[in-house]
Length: 71
View (cartoon, rainbow, N blue to C red):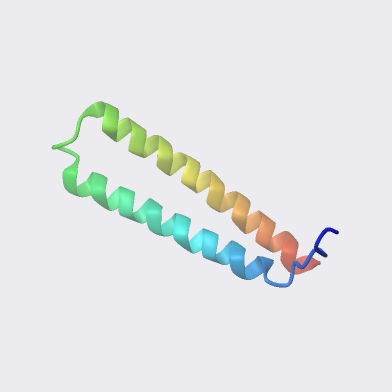
């Protein structure tokens, strides 16, 4: 038998995802600021691409959280 869909804490979990993702984004930006002249172009490009995906994820998490708060 399937568990009932308990969405009571979805907003809390979404906020945790947002906070964690933003923390990773800031940490990567800080790393780039501190080590930009020491890392290769490939590594820099990889980090920047990850940060773009992180920004997209945060936008989606925020939209989903907004949807959850309306239900």
